[in-house]
Image (cartoon, rainbow, N blue to C red; front, top):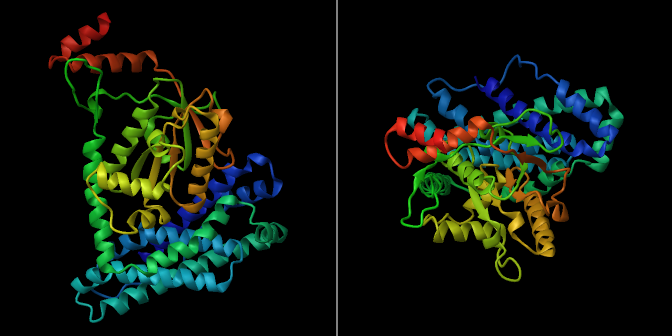
Length: 422
């Protein structure tokens, strides 16, 4: 079973690397195009053997760790390191961090299986799993070298993917964070994430329709209608709904006209991630608040921690936000780049956002902006994919109006009649 889990996490790492290269290939570099084609056609063959569990150890809880964010992040970093021929000291760092992460997470599971030394067993399982994945990655890189040795040499000399370069730059900070974490701090992080999900689900689970007489909070699903999203570079291509945009989320910029639903999309996305424990949590950063004053007075992480403490009433354990971002277990939604009216301030903020992405290469990021003025402070097209929020179709408009009238009374027929007459 663990061999199948290893194949799954490696496929995800390979797909992620190909996705990064494909995004950056807009420059038309023939070497990058060749590498993308190789990744797209590579097939991970089933292994003849792989890591095994001792008798009596429950498979699923152990597999859940190896499929988890910490495991996935380290193996993604391992692939980047092997592709670029990083020193063996870096591989040793990753191996040490991987086993430390397992020692923090697995002993409670193993103890319930009456294992005599849960700590040693956790470390042994992690070492076996890591070495198995490293061997498969080394085989992958060897096959690539056999296919095109010149291309591999160029990758190693130039590391021409800025995303891969950023991953390599973050390895030391990530491995240090994992190595210093123990079972107590892991439990604190997990408790924080669960508490934050509850608070974010409540905070972002309602919309407030305009009403001069009283404040009303309407559940999102009772009023929200998702607009369509089209890729900026392919306006005639398929229209994505919000769930599809969420699955494609990486470095993403939804662009739209005033009032088309950019901020609502941000809120809905944060709510969806708060209520789905299988997805990374999402932190919302309203850029007009972050940039208040002459310049941002805090880093992005400091701002998130401040908002967690003061707005959500859910303070994070020391270093937890950093650890979540480094492992890709958290995403960040930056809302309202266009609300920084001064063009110079927007360009400064664009640089802050790009540097944030470089510091946390595995964290997924969404930035909303109006179409008008975006080009004055455009985020790097090699990293960010732009989408246009489309106008409502007739059917979507009817659905929204019907939902709106439904808030005025419980009778569905009256709501439909009000919608038809509007």
